[in-house]
Image (cartoon, rainbow, N blue to C red):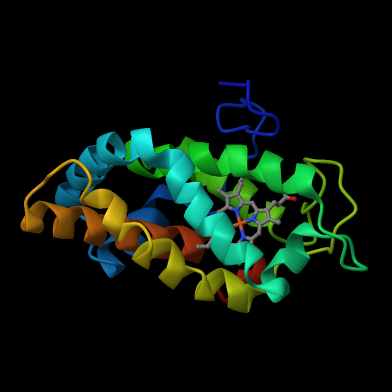
Length: 193
Ligand code: HEM
């Protein structure tokens, strides 16, 4: 799995998450995430796997069309860093499949804290050794839930599933992304999380 630079999901030296499995269970209950959603995500993983590049083209197209978002993949003076964009894109591809296929266990929690801090001043830019701006504001992390969710829907229809099945996959995806961004809010909101 270490063929993608900076993709450290299975790194045994990953720090354990401060979020416990009990916290996770309560968070799952809060977003109404059930075993049916787990099953729907598995199906979604099969549907999305052959379309990863097209999905990333849509998301990167959206970021690219918004200078205030490209800024986070740029130097502090505003020059975009194409190698940084490309390296993060490769890890984003793993993330789509991880969201669908990985068990939401302690290892998953640990990698989610890692992804969280990679968006904050604690660790942004370090993995790819880049000179970019220091952190992503929390407002954009939360705001991104909508485009990352809405744009996935057309891709979920590609394998000819029935409308109710597509709807189940879509809702499971929406719940998972909401839950993940909630986990990523931890370093931003530690004392009140
Ligand atoms: C890193 C997903 C919000 C910019 C990443 C990674 C993923 C991801 C999967 C790679 C993690 C890894 O290193 O393995 C998401 C999702 C978001 C979100 C699902 C919200 C729903 C944002 C926003 C921006 C952003 C709003 C700003 C435009 C970045 C940057 C990195 C990154 C610059 C690289 C950080 C580093 O230097 O290591 N994101 N992200 N992300 N994301 Fe996000």
